[in-house]
Structures are given as structure tokens and as C-alpha cells.
Length: 315
Image (cartoon, rainbow, N blue to C red; front, side, top):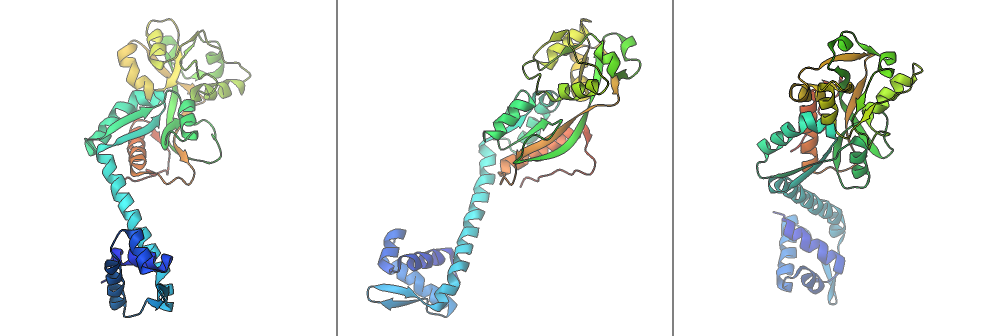
């Protein structure tokens, strides 16, 4: 029966053209390597090398065996790498990009999902806004991430939309949320918006700017803050209204603005949530695990994109 060790000895002898040189390369005694070659020849019923002086030369049978031996050893190495990668999930660190708003209503449960499968793992959820998460991806500091994508981000990236999160208008005045909010109403509203540092790239703001510009209005805010929690808290105090994804509203209103109510926008507007990674990337089992669990988690909260299954399956 052929063994990987026999094939490794065979390829080394083939490469060096010498049993002695092959033995030195492999760190074995020369008789041991010779024995492996003889055993392989006996198993195959052919002669693989002919002796010439102090060296050896491959026979026609050896030439035929060589590519198959290389593929077999590469397949074995790949199998070993796959097993080691899976094993690394059990005790290593899993790092995944996730924009801030999604972490509010999916982050904790996502981590719980990971730990339920791999209790010994260390988890890092990275990112504040989709733009800085994407920058981490572009620089190769993340394998994959979940971000909000109002438009195509960049060539060289695979973008898989998985869910839509409806944008809703939040107010402490129930009169303002009795009917859907139009672009004209939004243009004249007293608004607080989060993500002030990322205001140019923030997906929610991009969607709102497009909505307003299409009707001849310019977006304006009265108050700018960094985090959505502060924006919702200000709404609860009656100091301003805001527009945020429904998932964030469902999570934050009971705690920070229990008196607030919400209304949809007219026409309906959504943030599109997508999985993003480098095109043709060979994702690690850890990355595929996070993609699978993050997709399931977000689709249980937001509206799944029709016809898009969980895009990756972890081992």
C-alpha cells in the first residue's frame, strides 16, 4: 500500500537525483530512504529509478507517477491545513467587522451564537461605521464584515446583500408620526442625526440625502451627535426628532425613549445590509462561521433579501 512518506521520499529522490542527497534533505538515513523507494516499487510493480554512477535517474514510470504524487501530497497538506484551521476556531480569536448600528441589535446575540458553538473562542467585533469597517477590509485587517451599503463600494470586493432595514422617523410628539413622513416634512423637521464624524459616508444619511434631493430639498440637522443612543435619548427628551433603522429603534426606544413613536418614510427607504469580503478570497473557517451566523442573526431581525440564502457555510 502506498504511503505519504513513500511518495515524499520518491519526490525528493526525483528532485535531487541521489538517494544520499535525498536522505540528507529529509533528515533520514540513506538506507531508510532506499527502503521506502523499494517498498514503493514493490507496491506498484515497477522500477522507478535506474542507478547511474553515484546517482539515480527516473524511469518512464517515475515520470508518470510524479504529477500524481505531487497532487496527493498537496491534497494531504490541504487536508491538514483545513483541520488545523477548524481546530484553531476552538481556542483562537475570531475577528469580524460589523458596523455600529447593527451591533446594537445583533452584536450581543451574534457573540452568544458563536460561543454556543465554540465556547473557548475569543471574539472581536470591529468597527464603528460602515466606512471605517470597509477601510479595515480594504487594508487587509479584516477577512470579512457586515456593513450597510447604499451603493457599490469598490472593485475587487464581493458584496452579498442579505437584508433590508427600513428607515423610520422617531418623535416624542405622536402628532408627527400619525402618517408616513414625506421628503418635504423631513426637510422642515427639527432633526438630530448620529454618525457626525462619518456624515459624508454614513449609509443612512446617503439614503436620506438622495430622497430629499430627488424632491428638490436639502437635508439639514439641528443637532449632530456621534452615536445613535444619544440621538434617541434626545428624541425621548423632546429636543429633536431623528431617522434611524427600525432594528435600532426597536432595540433603543423602550430603554431610552419609551414615550417616542415612529412612522415610515414616504416613499419607503431602507438601508441595505451586506456581507463584504475581497473578491475570490479563500475565507478561513472562522470567517465563514461569522458570515453564516451574522447573516442568520440579521435576517431574523431585518427583512431578508428575497432569494438570497445564507451565502457561506462554516465547517
